[in-house]
Length: 465
Image 1 (tube, rainbow, N blue to C red):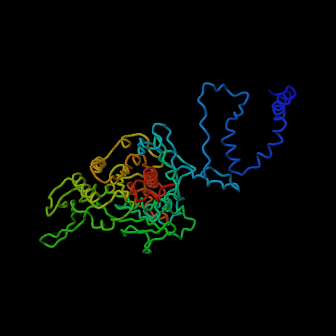
Image 2 (tube, rainbow, N blue to C red; image 1 turned 180 degrees about the horizontal axis):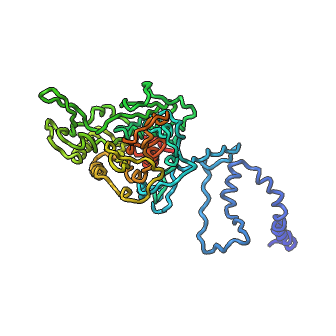
């Protein structure tokens, strides 16, 4: 049995340890923290994770909210503080699309861009100044030919339920980089071709970086032009084809020649159409006069020459011939094809060869029968295009040109007027268009179509922004 003298000492040892720990722990803590990095990490992650986080005094009661997710494990993929400030990201380019005034039609997917009106735009029109573009021939250079008013150059087409993409000639050229754009058709397409050259030329700081590859000057008599834009390695071309089907000559027994139109044969210029990236076709005005309109001993199918044939039905069959060629020869994964519709003529008191006139018109018309008119040729074009395999885009300019009785050369279609010589008022040009003017809007619509719906898969690396 232990003696009574040792009992107080044995009780004193645990009592001394209990009292000393609070004083000894601060002294021992520096020695505990002198451990290796892995041990320190283990301590901080595994041993101290029980410490509750500080909660602001004004924080809401979180007793009913689920517990926070556990912290992610330490890994090499966690972000590391940079040693130097990161460079700012490049500024984002403004979106090319202006959203619609009607939210339901925003983006243009449900908007008919051809349902609209012309609005006066004194700030942004014309897209190029009159008399500054060397590619406008004398037939369309109204200002150079003495037209005194300039209001016809200051109208912009505005759809009712959406806004067209902001036109940007530099972006247009960038989308054409390494590509070919070709307009195929009659003098109306040459009218549009010259407009396109002029609006794209405005984007070039050095205008000498654009030229006709053969050295040709634009004239009415020549039917093929190729303009090269050197900095973009692209071309804008024109090929004359009045009907898109084959024109020919037939000799009778007396060896006299008579013109014919082979409505089941594609035009001989079709060899140039292949492998073009953007094509813009048109035909129309040549079907309304001369032998084409009369249809007497003119239309052929196979080896059959029709003694009499309706020109409207001939147009339908010709357009189907063109459609079959497009379906067979063009690849929608590589090319975009437009068919530009019939543009309105505004003759008063007759036609182009019978005293029709349009002189003195300085403003668009906003009412009257012409506004709602729609030629049968356009209904035929819609019908043929809707039945094609290839997704042809109909550039339906008929509706928007109905308004523009002020946009034709009229008596200012000849350079003689500029020289002060008397101009014949007997035959006025109320079919073609002054430049700058209405065809500029047609090219804006082509640009809008390429922006809103680039389509070809092979273009993706060029068109993504």
